[in-house]
Length: 496
Image 1 (spheres, rainbow, N blue to C red):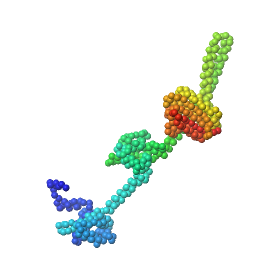
Image 2: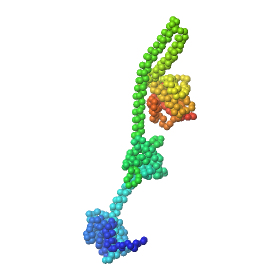
Image 3: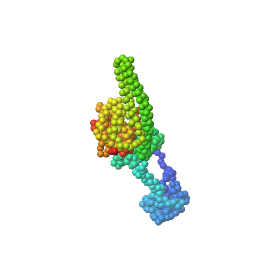
Image 4: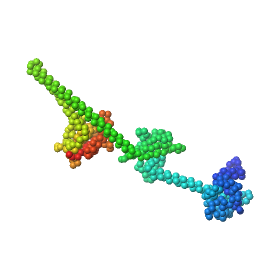
């Protein structure tokens, strides 16, 4: 140790001042009589006696009444220090108010100017034991939080790396703290952060925590997990605490309710469309019939004029060509109106035995109309025999249309070279089936989960509603990849 020669030397009064300032309790006993000569303020405060009050006291006045703290034992301990220079003991003092104070006491022989003495230094171990117990309890609380609670908690550093995670949090991430500790890894590598319904980054989320901000964590997987809670910036440390709870069941319920609401909205729109289509079909029928009658009248009048010689030869033939062309267009419009009336004429849900071939035939006009405009060929391979099934004819036709329109749109979106849709009806053991095959972009995961159309001009039925219609009729609907690309959609219905 290097001593600075310029440093001032300590005098006796300095040591007394340091002893008075110490939090360690000190008693000075006479080596021969064992009487108390002096006590520092810490000892006086703990024992609740002043120095003048302590001097006449004996061991039985200031020690526990238990046998192991008898005066004889205390004097022997002090004498041991006188003879050996130091002695240590666990001694229970008693304060003026009667509180027993466990201590760890050390007796040391010291040589004073007036002769040998014993300096006893002791500390209140009861307080330390209480602090230790509190620490053990706190440790048990932390352990319970980490291992035995459903609460999901992460401790993250400023960069979003995991520093601590509860067992529940690790389980949600698919990790084990023992075999695959996540410490040091970014939380964003396991899950997506969201705020206010939109995906966000760790930098944005941590900046918003001033000191606390709501946050949602979405963990992808076969059964996605949604955690919701708060992100708190911790004071005095450059770290963040994220406390979350599993709200997956609630979120799935909200999504299910939203999908049901969209189903209901579609059905309301579908009924309105049917009512409007019926009204249009009804209103168009009479003008079309009148137009056909007028054309027939013109044709008869032209024949009469030609017979009477009032018009040149050949004029009637040219007029008839024009009239025939007009008639063909009127017939075409009448066919469209008839098909429309047939398709939407029964909006009520009536279960009946129908031929799937007939349902397909009713839909083909609309399918080919859509396919022709998109440059897609429609190939039909209908069963040579009737395919009787038990179903709601109109809604089943809507499902056929939806699967076909979906296939045509997929081919256009994929810009496929083989622009062809294949429709097949057949009878199987479980009933009648319809399949629609395309060479589009192929199926995606959970294709029936939430597939209401997002197309600008879509009607809104979507694959989800098709799934609902078929399942309500005790049928099955599916999709699968097609060899060579594209997909095959199909459904089956109970035999009629």
